[in-house]
Image (tube, rainbow, N blue to C red; front, top):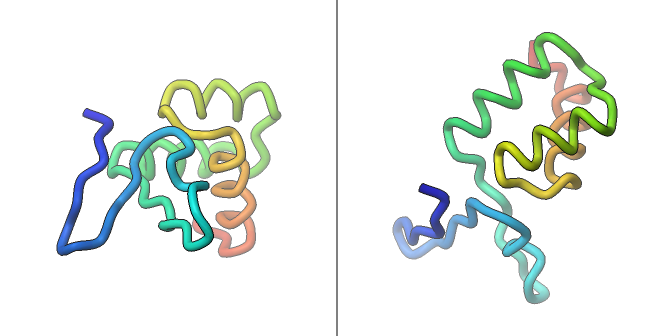
Length: 80
């Protein structure tokens, strides 16, 4: 279910680290499940510990840096 699909000619990367290739990297688009999971955790905990972030990244098939950035951005936007 984690696959790279082409939507209207734009590439959406939905798995591990395929975003960091080339100078113009495609921005990562979370799957619905990934976004809902991250938001649900964020509502409970604005600053999950590193080990929890590692677990989240493994469960969702995302890079740790992607998960860390999500929480950083969410805190900045304060998505309650």
